[in-house]
Amino acid sequence: MNRKIEIFDSSLRDGAQGSGISYSLDDKVKITLELDDLGVDYIEAGNPGSNQKDREYFEKINSMTLKNSRLVAFGSTRRKKCRAEDDGNVNSLLIANTPSISIFGKSWDYHVTDVLVTSLEENLEMIYDTIAYLKSMGKEMIFDAEHFFDGYKNNPDYALKSLKAAQDAGASVLALCDTNGGAFPDEIYEITKKVRSIFDVRIGIHVHNDGGMAVANSIMAVAAGATHVQGTFIGIGERCGNANLSTIIPNLQIKKGYDCIPEENLSKLTQSARYIAEVSNLTLDQSMPYIGNNAFAHKGGMHIDGIVKAKGSFEHIEPEAVGNSRKFIMSEVSGKNTVIKTINKIAPELTKDSPETKEIVDLLKKLEHGGYQFEGAEASFELLIRKHLGIYKPFFNLEYYKIIEEESKESNDNTASALIKVRVKDKTEMTAAEGNGPVNAIDKAIRKALGVFYMNLKNFHLSDYKVRVLDGKNTAAKVRVLIESTDGINFWSTIGVSTNIIEASVNALVDSIEYKLIKDLEKQAKNNGNDKDTENIE
Image 1 (cartoon, rainbow, N blue to C red):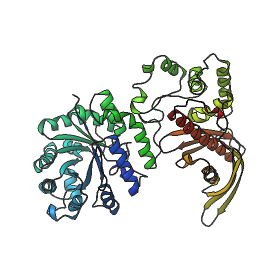
Image 2: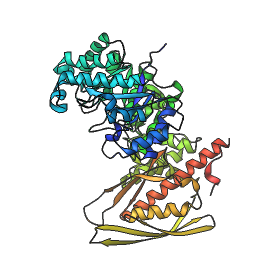
Image 3: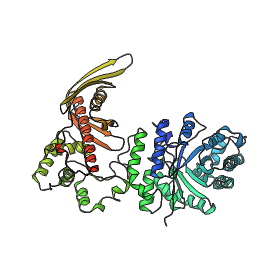
Image 4: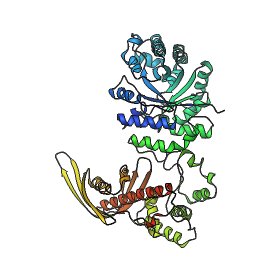
């Protein structure tokens, strides 16, 4: 039987300390439910003693039933020269009404004397008193030994005394923290192994990524005997972030045979990561292991040829194991194998030797010579194939648009209005919208008009927008616009090229919406058991 590794997610607490992260109450609830559905063991959701939002969160979430996860409230040891039962912050942890509580305390003597400014003995009493008091209230106690690895290297006897105080008080888990994120994997392994040989409670690991080794350090701690791993699901957190659980979980479960989450939930990993990124209002790193959009992307012709012939030749796992998918990137160096893979999604009867394949490859090269770059815009390339093969009919026509810009020198605001007219079959819709600049305005106007006809565009929005000047440095230069779009679960990219930045943006935006509508229609047809192509759909 595989050894169980407890997964402790701190996205809502430690992750919320990352730059640019500001969760609303609803955001926190959504992420909680997603993590629970995925099957993580613990969700550390916040410090009810620090702010009103966290207190309201615990009130709301306690009215719901979680299927898999235990909620954890987070707080610190009692104040100096104060009884734990008289400390307001400590008692606020009880108000949260969670089954488990995580308490952090100092394990580095330098922090005790120079940051906490108290005696070494008083700090040990603060750890013991706080955990013992909360334990007496029926709570499972997790002790986060803050700065443990730095503390151990500086004064191992005292660092171990902090753990003993927590264990004697009733802590079920001793989580060893690399708070500054500067430890190396060999140090993590040796020190964790030493701790594991001394204490008979569960040993945990909590590391930060300041040295770029948080995932490796977490895995080395497990190799040394840790059975409880803390992190944030997509690696968010203060400074360089926390250990990335979306990388740690498949590394441990697929590669090492540990049980981290229910086996049947591994295929949800990519969807969960992208959903959490979306709720967090973050653009997920495309090259993030396992769950990134480029994690199983291939561009080089030799690599693609190898993958086509033998799946494992350039991939360390099957992408479907974590809910991701293989992607062949379109470019002039990728060859016919890449193109035929995409063509066969639309026209499975064509081969590498079909004249249509050569025509599309030649068209690809011609367009890339003119400034297009389909390696970052596979959705536009798929639409290009459909158009060339004559199996594409647009869902709508943008018949007219007009941009009006206004600039206030007093407020430095640059507002714009867009007036647009779209046609869907024999019906037209004309509308206007205001935005922060012309591209934002026309994006809002088009989506507003099309929302009358297509309800499935409700959650559609742009998640990234890039512009690059291609030739020359004058105002007549050609520009390339790359748009990334999402419906909250899936992400896709489209491209537009023109000497007019508005025209390039509109072309990319129209492609993006058309691609979304095509994919939804195909999904609907598949669910209905109808495999007909979309060529007859207008």
